[in-house]
Length: 277
Image (cartoon, rainbow, N blue to C red; front, side, top):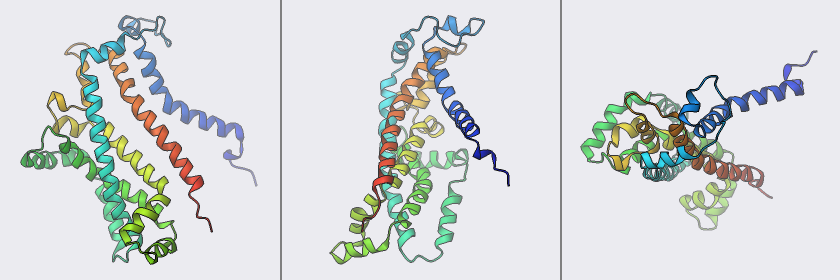
């Protein structure tokens, strides 16, 4: 019987290289663009590498718009949304994974279905709700919708991790005096650390990158987040791509660092989270 293409090391390396190039080439191109002048960017023939690298675009990125304010707003909103999403989804996931709920599969199906609605169809109801509550141009105007949007994926991730943890550990903790909530906090969540960090990464990145709600709910200049703020660099008839690219790199770096740190913890949890007899 002939082997499949996956049996060839060269083809596997080629496939891996294509995936890496597809993922990193856009970021590399943005980085190189941020180091070029506007004149070099539009010159022909196209130069792949900057002929005279400059950091002036990064200076202009902070000078032309309050980029630090945008970064601060994005960080506060994403952090609050992540924390609340994890707290709520951990309770929901534990109930689904451990309690004798009727129609459990139907509940999971409803959770999956709720995440399939296009965000644009929810924009008007969310806007009207926030306007009625008087929350427009506040952090809560974005945190609350982000929590709702993150709950399905966070819950599904945590359910799969909670189900892999032996019930005997919780029973032993409750025999020793823990309540069910105490067993969840002291036993289940620490053992499910890889799942918690994974759900946290997804929630944080989703909140950091979201554009439509941030544009619609927080129109005040002092409450704009990074995705909305970056769109303001362009003029009516001009697109300063080097400056925009510099702002994008500044916005990408904090998230990339956080993801790298969390991913290391996820890997550590996967290798060290085994139950010892």
